[in-house]
Image (tube, rainbow, N blue to C red; front, side, top):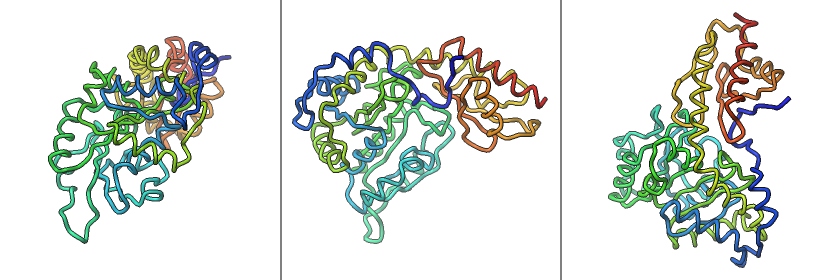
Length: 348
């Protein structure tokens, strides 16, 4: 029986078109700048996001790390949310490898940071303090339910940053999901940011890679950092080819994943024993919890769902995250709701 994997959109497999493109991709040595497929991907990504240049990077974590290290020196400070992926899930890389100090602020439920909190966090010029150099946002915001930060909010943060002589970086791992959710062109959505990284290997289905975009000068610095981090690649156009297909064919259909997330949320909300955060999720993530009436925890439910050929993500003792993606169709949504119903009826 087919496995329905809702743990994350990182589990996506390459599409048939991607596999064909990978097999036929013209290749060169990217360390020499001679891989035509990588060059095409970098140029395409930069154009789609309204930036001057792009850099193909093995992972989103490396992309964020390279961006911070390209923008900041040792002892500099980055303002970011306390639920930010860079703070919570990237192994403390900016501190361990760059000596960059994270200054965390509370993320609001919609993924934003309060403007007054950002303003207050900017350090005065004082020898006792690290130098505030960078503000980092995340869009969509994973830990905040897949919330999409608006163009207006991003513009306000950008204006604040630039007025105060700071740089704005965006962890845009799922920026095209944000653009689809808001009905806004991605380039307009991120226009105020100085740098942005996005993942090809999440909802865009490519097997490997992210792209970091910004000015020519920034990408030149980031290219050196990528080399230092061991991210220089040779005939990696075989991977970039899948990224090109992702931008051409998968980005335009992301709205379908959001619609299926809503169907999934609504179906689960109707089941006794579950509490769904939002029946209209902001993008492709559904967060939910077990009701107090259910005597077992999420680990037990996940195990029983697996017996029903449904894989669910556990984010807490009694909490789940379900993520829709290219390989989750309408029938899969229906089957997943049925699996939850079958499992929960044992405890009702």
